[in-house]
Image (cartoon, rainbow, N blue to C red):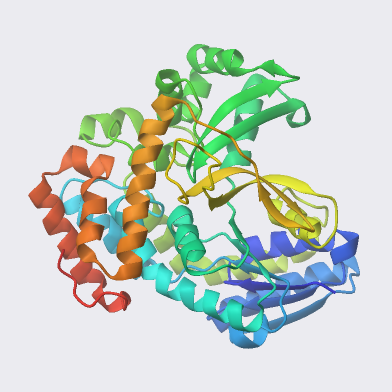
Length: 442
C-alpha cells in the first residue's frame, strides 16, 4: 500500500482530480491517502469529494484527513505540496505597492517584485515542511506544485537532499494549444521544451516527425482568432522564433516589452481572448471573488460529485507516482537543479526540462544550449532568482533589492532610487512574515 500525503489538500479541484487519477492505476487503487490542510472547513470539503470517488469506483483505498502534518507524514512514500501560505489580504500588496511606482502587475506569483516577496513569505513555511519530511518520511519523494516554482524548488534543493521535482501545467498545456491551432492530434505531436518555469521554450515542435513551426507561424499570422488568443506570446514567438510556455499575462510581466507604458498594456494585454491576456491585478480580483463565494461553490460542487467522471485525466503526478512505485517509466517536464542539463543557464539553478520517473527515481534529461536570443532573457530571470534565493535564505535585504533592481519590467519603468524605495516599502509591509530577516532596510 502506497502512502500519499497531500499538504494543502484544501485545494479542492486539484485534490479531487489527482486522487481520482491516482486510484485508476491498479497498483495504487489501495493507496493510503492522507489529506492535510490548516483550514478544517476546506479540508472537510476535500474529504467528502475524495470519499465520493472511492465509493463510486469501489476502490480499496484508505482515506484520512488531519490538520497535523507530523501525524500525516509518518512513513509517507509520496508527499505532494500545494500550499498557499497567505491569502489575498496579504498578497494584494505585492501588486498594489509596485503599481504606486508604475509597475503594473497581472499575476505576480512567479518572479519580479511580487513573485520575490511571495517567495520570501512562503519559503519559511516550505522549509518547515521539508524538515518534517526529513524527520518523519525520510524515504519519501516530493512533488511540489506551489509557486513561485523555480525559487521554491531552488531553495529546497539547496537546503535538503529529499528527491524532489516541481510540477507545472504550462508545458503540456501550451503544447496542446499549439497542436490545436494546426489541427494536429496530440498523439502525433512530439517536442522538446527547456528553460525555466513559465519561461521554457519549445526547441522543436513536430507533427509526425516534421517541423510544425511553419504551420504555427502561418496560423498566427493568417488567422486573427489565433493571434488574438495569445497576443503577448505570439509576439514573442514572431520575434524570438521559439514559442514560450505559460499565458500571455504571465509573460507580459517577465520582460520589458509589453507593460512599461499604458498604451502598450492597452495594445497587448487587454483584448486577448486567452484565459489571461494580462489585465492589471488579475490575481487579486479573482482571489477576492473566490473569497466571497467559495463556500457556496464548494457545496454546489459537492452536490454534483456523483456526476464527476472516474476516467483518468492528464495530470502528470499520477503517472509519476505510478512509475516511482514500480509501474511503467514515465517522461514528463519537471523543475530540477541544472546539473549541466541546460549548458547556457546558471549551474544548479532550477530549470524545466524533460525528466524520467521510474522505480530508480527521477532522471532529468540533458538538453544542451537553448537558442541565444531565448537564453539572454531566460538567463537574466534565472540569475535574478538565484539572487532572491540567496537573499531569502541568508536574510540579506540588500540582495533582494539587487534582484528587484534587475527585474526587466521594473527596470523599464523605474529609476534606481524608485526601486530602492519600493523594495523598502514592500519589506515594511511584509516584515511580520519574514522571520529569516533581522532587519528590513535594503
